[in-house]
Length: 287
Ligand SMILES: Cc1ncc(C[n+]2csc(CCOP(=O)(O)OP(=O)(O)O)c2C)c(N)n1
Ligand code: SF4
Ligand SMILES: [Mg+2]
Image 1 (cartoon, rainbow, N blue to C red):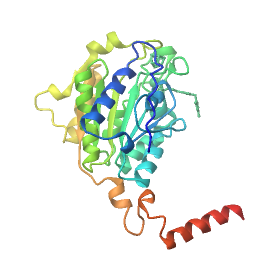
Image 2 (spheres, rainbow, N blue to C red; image 1 turned 180 degrees about the horizontal axis):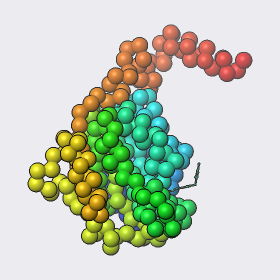
Image 3 (cartoon, rainbow, N blue to C red; image 1 turned 45 degrees about the horizontal axis):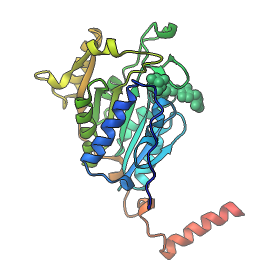
Image 4 (cartoon, rainbow, N blue to C red; image 1 turned 30 degrees about the vertical axis):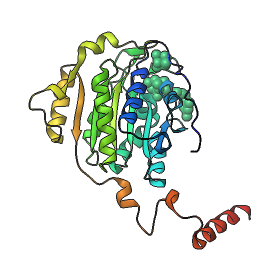
């Protein structure tokens, strides 16, 4: 990147929770001194998917539900980038739900932030996988993606924040970026981010959130105990916030890339053996 563009102003409704997520991400990237040309932000489709237009970065608006394969590919192509995926609950848990399972399992060095508002905001308020029973005549039980993440042994960082509590949201965004920067692999941060137009949950969530960071004896390194606590809190109709689980496992790029399979963006394309392979590939399309 030789020039930076001026980020556009958000197009969200006044009061949308996504403003808080943008503010936290911008502040965390600044605090960690990650310059714009080292940031790659990939967004899904939805109101939340416009976030990458509102900060200085390499940005890419990918296909609906395809944030995780795109960020995984970006990190493998250039592991020197700070790669962040952002999107909605519809994007990440419905059409993209299969990718979430495999991303937890693969543990690529990316941060994935999901703005969960329990609805498809952009398409005017249909029930998403996290919508409660009864919302828009939803007959189904809501999905808890943090519990899904806990059930997959490869996951290494699972947290939940609330855009109505900006100090904790910033702390968790910083912790997520640091986990990944230190080689820990994928940091997954779900943010409860109310949609004031189609599912205004501010009043409900203000009283139902529960902070495990403040709970004496809560151990985020104990996967089984964390799962049990999440289940108890769910039965009490509470929404757990905080660092829910932090484990250790190698990041995908640390084992997938090596001297026989180097990162494509870091290869010297002037080398004759590489330019020969590139030319052969190009010729094969022309033939
Ligand atoms: C393949 C495909 N299917 C459906 C759509 C229509 N669509 C656009 S956004 C969206 C859901 C958005 O919900 P969510 O991901 O929760 O984002 P939000 O708008 O709530 O931030 C859908 C179904 C689409 N764009 N592409
Ligand atoms: S429709 Fe909902 S999710 Fe979309 S910008 Fe407005 S408040 Fe935010
Ligand atoms: Mg949504």
